[in-house]
Length: 77
Image 1 (spheres, rainbow, N blue to C red):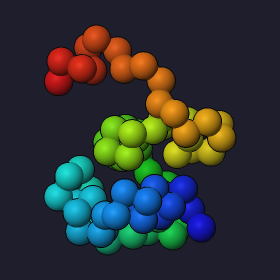
Image 2 (tube, one colour):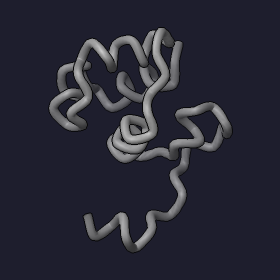
Image 3 (cartoon, helix red, strand yellow):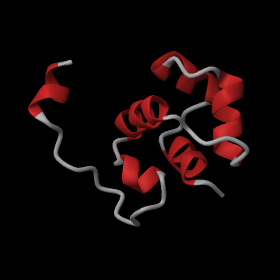
């Protein structure tokens, strides 16, 4: 099972809720979750913020789920 699906289920979100929160089309998110498509940089960023994790975790570059401290620039947006 993909990390995207695990995090979505853990947060009790439906795919349509992902769409509403991130602006990522539901069909696109579904393909990302199934591994048929890679998330773009901007999509990965939005999903990491929504799930409260790091982009590295979503890209399977680390097994550490905890996000890095947010930059001051990011917390202002």
